[in-house]
Length: 362
Image (cartoon, rainbow, N blue to C red; front, side):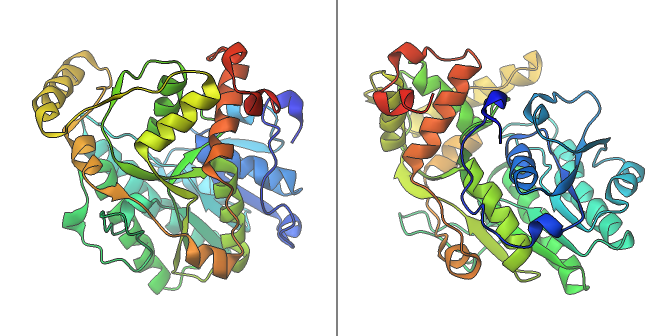
């Protein structure tokens, strides 16, 4: 990928064989954080890509990605038929990823109904294989610091919040289609970090706030951080080496949130917050923030669902993807470094503060 595009970070797995001769490949959600990374990875391997986005989407993430643009919407089945026509493979990355939604039904129409509609359109169009981007939000969670995997017990009642429930139900639907003969491989990214998070995602917003010194306190939890380009490489490996109907966790490094914030602030030249807040007393405040968000149309700083999720350590194992696919994730520090460089290139951070390790690649 050309450095003039501002996203010149290498992608692990560039030696994957065969993908360049794939024919036309559709990427849904191509303007999003993970979707754009998948599109860049494919284009960097010489693959002919068709990039699906909604009308009016910000196309900044695709500025330097060669390929056909097509307008499509997961709530418009006719547009999905046009998008998949003539494609050999499909990477279905598009999703509504928000931790607070005033109308959960709208999220379900995209994440569940839209996914089913797209996969059925792909089957009708003769697509050979689909890689479906799920999430570890759809998987079981142990929560005590033991990493969960693809076989961790998992029930609908275990999933907190509309996003997690929608991804769980969407994955159930995808597995049903696989059982009916559709060739589809499922990948479950953890919390991606890196270049191209222009929205940003909830994780990216946390990185940016900590790097700006706008995080005076935090609620301790644990999460798995992965470089977004490693997630993209994992998608391609899943296409080539994954087994239909199976899922593969695409993760990186398990870290406590205090350690993640410490890493971010060190590389950004800031002091880490020292105040750790208890979860219980924050619940009424979170409820008030949700109420105001519904009235104002803004996004709350925290919600009762996010606080509930913080009670468990969201640690995951990528051993299956490493062994079966040849997946090779980088350390979390590289993901954070590349995210900071990209934020600074977009004028969101003062690079004069950066640690020398960040300045070396900026």
